[in-house]
Image 1 (cartoon, rainbow, N blue to C red):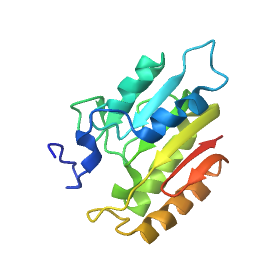
Image 2 (image 1 turned 135 degrees about the vertical axis):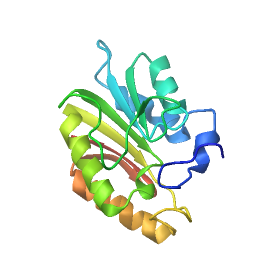
Image 3 (image 1 turned 135 degrees about the horizontal axis):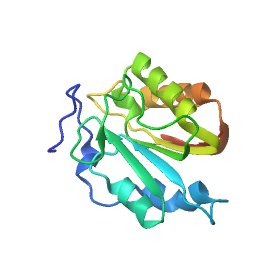
Image 4 (image 1 turned 30 degrees about the vertical axis):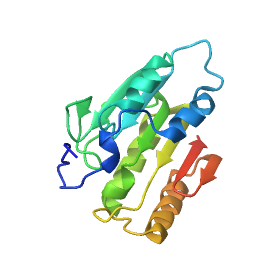
Length: 168
């Protein structure tokens, strides 16, 4: 693992080259109803940019944000405001990030998601249990997932263990 985050947390998935399988399998759900316009996507915790590149290749305008700025804009996730205007984002990608943020940081980021979300915004969120995270076990992760989903408060499109897609 070559990427070290500011809080000394590591995401084992950052070294992977291809988009997340969940994104690959569900990107059409994220883009549904947007066929005749550019879709604004924010990839929060973009890592090496693999999901950002996938969405760019689907014709989206992508803003990539991570705590390490070797791909995308640098932002202290859970502390800084996301670098976009209110109501300007159609799709939020938050893959494999939230378990590395403490509760206060997660709440701040959820509020940022709500701020930047357009009227019909869709969010895709994925988690996994990790020893160096705030979701060390499967049970911790499931509790965190439910808490995040409940705080976002959007309509469930897909919801399964460790991931969900919801619409504002």
